[in-house]
Image (cartoon, rainbow, N blue to C red; front, top):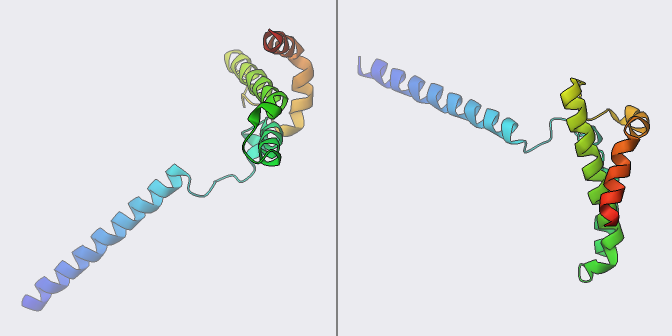
Length: 124
């Protein structure tokens, strides 16, 4: 009888530990420790501009960022443009809101009015 109680206690402990490890694994998946989709170009249309900005900072040894202002402005313009495109597509009901990489060249043409506004605002 006593050994049965111990066996039940051991089984309960093992079930509890396995369920907690499953919860931990699920929470890691949600937090995104490892990217579920390694192709970041699907999520960021400005990935190249960001890399160019970071390369400029590295070239100047992380000290004089004022020399990278044109790269920073280019990145800000890119983010502003694609954010406005995403909102316009969202309100029109187009999905995905960020066009796929192969469709982005056409989107640049279709949303040229947004680009003009972004560029005009950055010139001020």
